[in-house]
Image 1 (cartoon, one colour):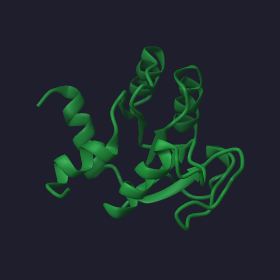
Image 2 (tube, one colour; image 1 turned 60 degrees about the vertical axis):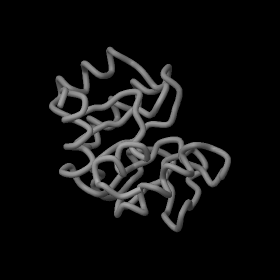
Image 3 (spheres, rainbow, N blue to C red; image 1 turned 180 degrees about the vertical axis):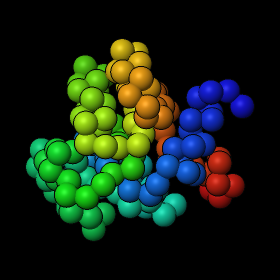
Length: 138
């Protein structure tokens, strides 16, 4: 198992079950909507983070990570790579344990800062693909 696979395993199985999904709105055609549903199906509590602060999949939304009034274990990032580093920095500041950059979201400098702060991090992967693989369920 390589280091990335080990980080994926730790985040999905050991880190905790509260996932802030940054970029999640009630737009059913967006990838974040479907991925959040998969996270819920596998027992994760999702917390929508979007400027509109919409309720999605029955969960109250918040405009920013800083607005969430309870601890978050993982910050799942569905914003473009130009904005992702700022979200990773906010995840560190707000006390998250891990950061997950979705497929196509890459920021090597943010990865370095996040890892240096002691958080696990995965880039350019999707938990909706990885969870069933690790869990053994499809």
